[in-house]
Each structure stands twice: as C-alpha cells, then as structure tokens.
Amino acid sequence: MRENKILMIKKARGPYTGKFDLPGGKLEHGENLEEGLRRELQEETGVTVHSIKLLTNLTTRCSFEYEGENIDMYQVGLIYEITDADFSALQENLNFEDSLGAAWVELATINPDQFSPFAQEIVKLWNTLNKNQNQD
Image: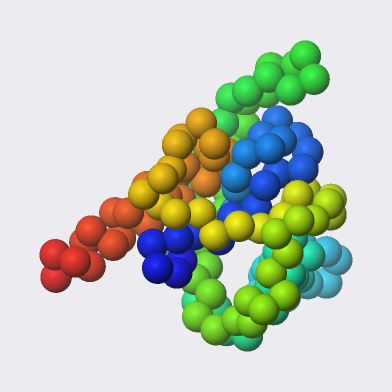
C-alpha cells in the first residue's frame, strides 16, 4: 500500500486472466516463505524487497468455471506488508508466467469486477484495518 493505492498484478492466465490480483505464488523446493515472497515479487512486478512484515493469513472460497469445468476451491494466503523495497524497476508491462505486469491501483476507483475474489478480500481487509487504526 502507498498513498491509498495497492500494488497489484494483472493475471496472465487461469480463471482470472486480465483481472487484478496480488503478486504471489508457490514456493520452490528449499525456499522459506520470505524467500518465496521476495522471488515472486521480483518475477511478477520487478520490485526488489528489502524488508517485510507478516500481517495476517486469509482463506477465501472461490467457485468458478474454467475450461468448461466447474471449480470449487479454497485459496490460502499469507499477507505481508512490504516495509522497505526498491520500486524503481517496477514492470508495468510484462508477460511472465502469471503476470502481465504490475500497477498501483487506487482504492477509491476499485470496481470489484476487475479483481480476483482473493484480491477483493484483501482490499476489504485493508479497509477494515485502516478504519480501525483511524478510530484509535
């Protein structure tokens, strides 16, 4: 998050192709969580992460049709806040595995149809956290 914007990628494949989602993915053999996060962010956005902080975990249920098949699954994510990073190499246009590039998306302009269900839940969570902090 930065100035009421959230860093998202455009999905390159799968049921949410063309929609915004959080950068992420699965671990490679021998990687720990932070190494995997740093690698995925570098690959999907061009951002080099120096420092991160675990915020929470989130599980969402997703139902969709993909390639003629009805899919019902759960997505589980560990949500980190980037506390220090180099954004100078941010890749807005990319075609790497799961990412068509990264963008800072303004929260005030969010249209839920433009986001994956998981990304929608993250935005709701972030808005709730910020609302609670502003009330303190």
